[in-house]
Length: 481
Image (tube, rainbow, N blue to C red; front, side):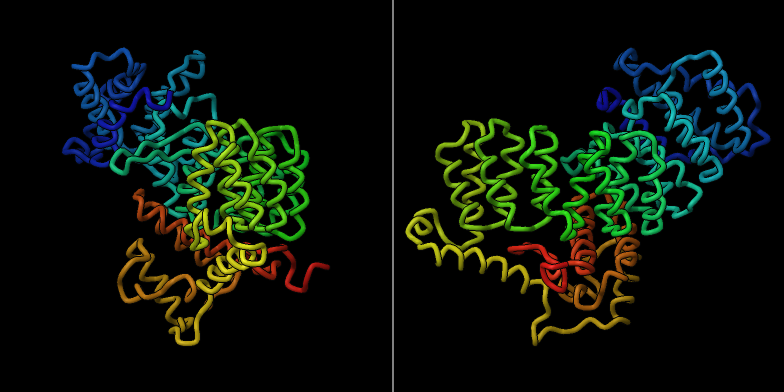
């Protein structure tokens, strides 16, 4: 369903979203006669993309472009014409989702946040957002970029959607939930955290709860932990799975037992979410329970477990991968072979050499990898230090450029940032992420993920002795916490 309008949708986007202001749009409101607006509305109605012959698609795209231009140029009168038609549709109990999605875009172009509540009502109603998700995504992203609290109803209305996806053919990738929401809400910045947290106690549908929980986990919102724990235990299925993943991201010492119990359960979705969470949580005590799951016939679960065992590198995990590579389920065996090979590259050894290494040597090899990662994130004695003034100047430069690369602060790496910041600076990074999130490119999204890892590190330092992978996740004062 999400791809059924792709060909026409791309043509429309180039005309309607990227180049919306044609010569027609420059005419004054006085020149927009009521019958012209009515005709524009009629052009937008009852568009059945699949029924349009291929040779007519371009003409229809141009007609829609012209209709949008006329309505936008008419300003409030154009919005009134759309609103009147929407009321007639509702009164007649007619379904015209394509019209509603297009109307939302035009309303945004006419008055932006002035019509945020109207757009939110369209998106939050009984409408298939996937019918043309490009309309929805780009309008929401434009709203988020304004950082105007008035657009929050629009962003909240979208949280119920978990099916919308955005094809980026120029980057050979597709954005899916929850990444679609992460980009939109990421573009809104740190001020979105409190409204999302409020939804954990006020939202009525499981999909909204799930989306909000995913976003709060990535934002390292410690204040949401009690609500997340409750959802992870007794929430509706969709919200429960997201809460488990979010608890893994936050990595609080109190949550290991809850996550470890999840991989021993019978519900395959809970087992998968818990395996994902334990990967992120970073406690080596999870390895024995994860290793037993490599006998699963479920390739997706097996792949997640294999990735976790490579990340939580221990002799037990490496041996489990080796065993799976030789005798695992047919579909999973190649995954284990590739993952085991990647683990040996990290360890700087080979399968043959590993086999001949004693227990003490194996422990030292895996411990050395963990030490190396910790050292990578710590300033060395000869490293240049990043002052507070330089940090603020760097963030300003990166925000303007919408990139972390090059410039006067191209020398700054993760260890410099972590040495100059604390958890109090998480909002600073979230607002910087807002500047980067609108770059729908591989480089831009990689930079967003880099910031998210830094936010996770800083957030965990509030209550963890070691924020990364460690033998036992414990509080700053030791295991008694």
